Length: 467
Image (cartoon, rainbow, N blue to C red):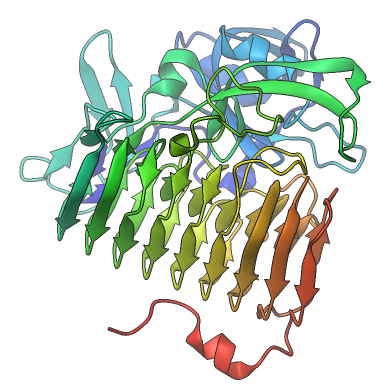
């Protein structure tokens, strides 16, 4: 809901996220989380309340089924299917730590929580919206937008007859909603990709080619997008605005060839700014390499350049500024990305080092700052999987947030090559220090001349290029 172009706040129990309560413990077998009783007293009788739970690099949206108070604690259970998925998968997971960094949470979707200016609550069964106006708002004259659809534009051909040679120029795409959390819950694996099934492996699974043993499996679905494309060739967006959308802004999914996203603005996104490429088909386990016999499925030759991506992932905190899954010959260059809840640019998917469908990707000249507003285990630029002949170069990454509720206050990085990252060259990137992570990488990576000593000319050249 937006009032006079300003996003209203879905009623919640805290105004400042630094004031969030933390869980006390959890019982995975009973699918129960124990929290302070005072945290949930207001909503004991609320029928449709939800918990938004901070879990390392994702947040889970869990519809509350029951609350049972005993003394100063309360046992909270959740609706299906998200409860089963949430408690079966080990990563990401609610944190209970010896040093006081237990997972934080906030509560929402209950009329009982409506107590501050700018907050709203929808009673869907009574077809009523409640709203407390901000100071100076005259509701008899206000422009109020309550979105009713998740996708504003869908571009879709067929693999053999794709939509071709279309350019959208100077168009604003605004006010798309995101319904999944209140309908089915939302338990994501990473970058907003929600799990449809998941479980822990006992014993761990041996994997080939040097990958470490696997302790979990998961299958994912894809979040809604204001504009989505499938089976499209040379379909481009130039000087468009994607603003005030509750999930992903622009999504190039499967059977994508060519196309450009240039000089667009992505602002006030609940989820990802831009997505490119599949992040595993729904029937494909997320940790497996993906190399389809029909290579047309892979997003190939897309250019994402000179875009401003700001204030994104403000609902689903585990989303990213620009996310690319299984992609080939993609260029993400000279974008400015800031005010992001998690990672600036995420490139790759699969958590393994086997050569598959990803190669020849370029991340160059981007300016990334004010990221990780809410989530850690993060970086300005992050990679997964084997990507031969790919380059991350001449980017500037600086100025990370320090949320008090991060699960590990030191587990953040400027550059981060995660599991299976292979055959990637990382060079000439300016960062204030060499705070990088190379986690379970494969072979063939090259790191050259990164850090504060990189030439000032590279630092000055990052970001949106002048026309």
